[in-house]
Length: 528
Image 1 (spheres, rainbow, N blue to C red):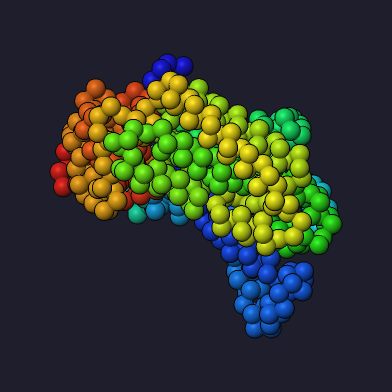
Image 2 (cartoon, rainbow, N blue to C red):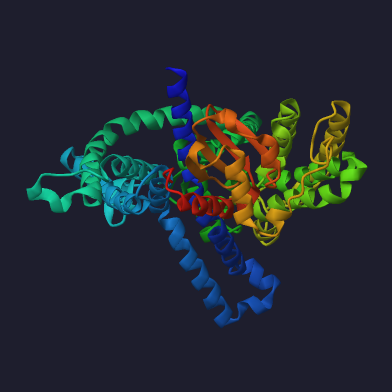
């Protein structure tokens, strides 16, 4: 494979990884509501707080739980729409519509195959044979993978056919109207192949799971993979593999089979509760979930921030205080770790590797102690809901492991920063650039500086964003003025591929991207 093809393939994989953030962004806050409501209707909580037994309050909580659970009953649909929107480059609206059409056709086609080949399971055996009811259709339990397949097909059909012109007799079906039709045809072909391949795919994922699920080694490998893949934007792909495929294990709960960590955890957390015998499985599930992220967001990153502040030059301390505080508060409240990680990842990769090893070691310790805290995200709110409000979580293990880990992290970083004179925020020889523009939400000015610093509108091919980064394809990467980019308030600039730049702005990056789009639209020299 040529270098150009490798770079294009890498960008496609990153685009796919970013698309997984959309459904996860919905699941995370809804999961918090679901977790809180589910915890407060448990018998042990009512016994502890008698006012929770109020009939009206219970009806409200049960209603919230049931409404929120609709999201988790339709995870594949979320992934179909999210992937279609994130992966398609053109006409994202018709891509999303086509993804739902594709998902229905996929399940319908598999249903026909199962009937025709005599493999349609009776209702009593569906779970054991990996089948289930999806939107009223008995089909294979592909879970989120089915939605991802449908989303990818819809995105590709959209990009390829959204401008197709048909003969006059069929002109009504030209352009965007042809996309869902093409998606139906492509999905039928895929739906007939999947049942043949599924048994081999399942075996391969189960083989992988034998390593990932093998006690402390698997926990260590998982954290290493997640954190090392963050710079490439692929950590969501890895996490989804464990959450929604046999790589994360297959769990039998009350006679029903659950594939992947998250569906099993949903069943126990939100339906059965801590008093059910299935709760004994929770530590095996949460060892791959948010309790590990909590070590990073609640303990390690604050320690890193303190080390950076203490080692910053005296002249920069007043200004760097606000920058570092923001980088610490963002993951603490919002679970977004990239701004802090990018502040040292590219200038001190060995220090980042040390950080990864420390995080993985802490995760292993939590697993060995039988910790059962958390869901998807690792914020202080998640700790309160899924740690403190549920019984039998052993939430105190996070303090037992997290506090010493924070101390070790602080001293390792403080020593390394001084020892190797690492240019973390506040240790620049020149005066530190102010991020006033971002703080004041002056996104138009930020966009103007960005466009100017990367060579002007004529040098820009496309502009996108992920959670924290502005991602821009360029005609000529040598036209970029990195010093000028600092004036925009960015916390990091790097080139993951030729003629492709990432500019880190943190959680407000979407507003920067919108401002760039608006200014680009003023001059039609460059397509958006």
